[in-house]
Length: 87
Image 1 (tube, helix red, strand yellow):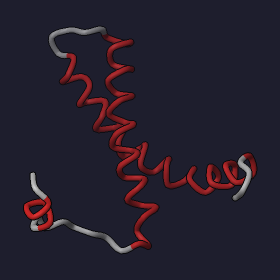
Image 2 (cartoon, helix red, strand yellow; image 1 turned 90 degrees about the vertical axis):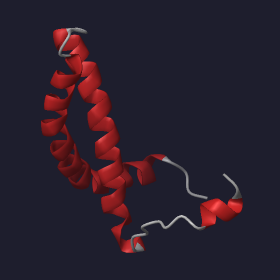
Image 3 (tube, rainbow, N blue to C red; image 1 turned 135 degrees about the horizontal axis):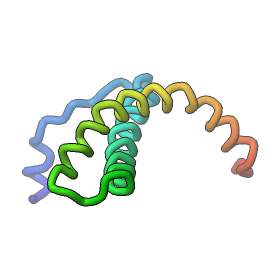
Image 4 (spheres, rainbow, N blue to C red; image 1 turned 180 degrees about the vertical axis):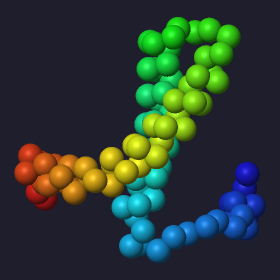
């Protein structure tokens, strides 16, 4: 796509104050899906109902991951600040 075309595509933009929640949503969505893929494969193998089992696990994992990320995020920020040199 050209620059002219991509500039005309409307995009939803959230206020900056929502960044921690949007981050948690994206992180939970991606990580819960990947973990559901791996854990379902390890537990049940690659069968005929593999993706159905993955999606059933994902329905539980995604909301749990979202809440966990929101809870753990402040601790992780402190740990990173404690272990990484500042600029």
